[in-house]
Image 1 (cartoon, helix red, strand yellow):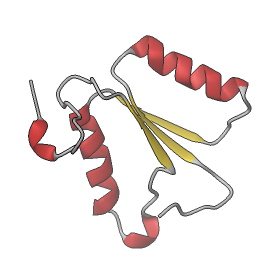
Image 2 (cartoon, one colour; image 1 turned 90 degrees about the horizontal axis):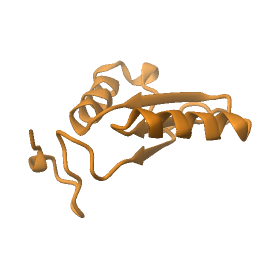
Image 3 (cartoon, rainbow, N blue to C red; image 1 turned 90 degrees about the vertical axis):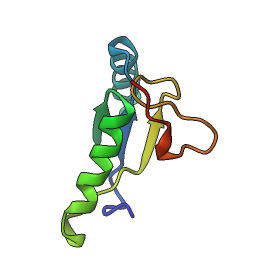
Length: 88
């Protein structure tokens, strides 16, 4: 659950550096000033989320939402989004 009702935390999973730049720029131009984090592939996404789970409950801060590139390297996201779809 999101800790702070007045702040958003956006996690963007995108392998293309230009697309990451465009997302960040667009959000900033619209006045978004809260936390944005980027991961570059599916493996990094899982590690990021697992690291949150390793923290003490009161220190956990989950993303408000995740923007996910469905065609990232190292993890392919199909309809089920199951963890067994890891690719090299």
